[in-house]
Image 1: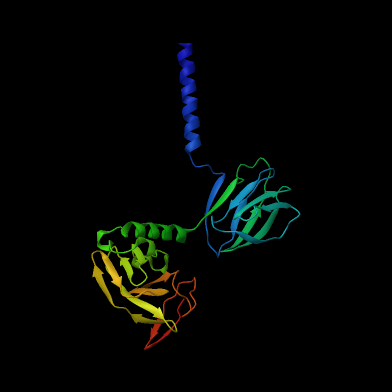
Image 2: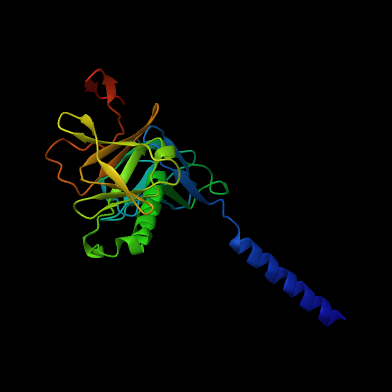
Length: 261
């Protein structure tokens, strides 16, 4: 009987350990990036906190307010930063400039026994996640029998978008001459943005489940009523106008247009 009790206790202990190991650990924090927000990083005396930026980011400049009370060490050639308070209740701001983004952090130190201290802080980027799904869908759809005559090595999937996501195509890619779009619902009006940021309606046709635009460009605008979405081709020739990161939709004023943020 005693042996059975011991075996049962061991089994329960192993089960509890396995359950704990698979649960979310509060010492690992996930932060959604927002370039207009200051991110608070909870640190603890005697605890090294790793701050992990985007996988393709490289830290270029770090500026901290109180460098005497904090150890701040970047990993060379990466987007990883290690921070540690050198005294209790130390607090300072840190500005980080990478090759892609700018971050504003508030480091807050606490006592060594404070369990709220983060071991790791990892940033997430919604646009990157969505664009990765768009790329995966485009590559999968490029296998469609209707596109069998296209050279897969010449297809460009490097399209990203900004604007109303209800107009977002499920797939966007080009073959160097034509743009292929697949929409989950109704097809919006499609305009090419050229010259002095002017929109022109494009010629298009349907081919199976695709809308085929008979040209490629650095930017297109998709419209449905008051809603708009900008589709950017990052591989296109950018000499005609500067491709910008912020979304905009030209606002119609008769035959003239102006930039609208």
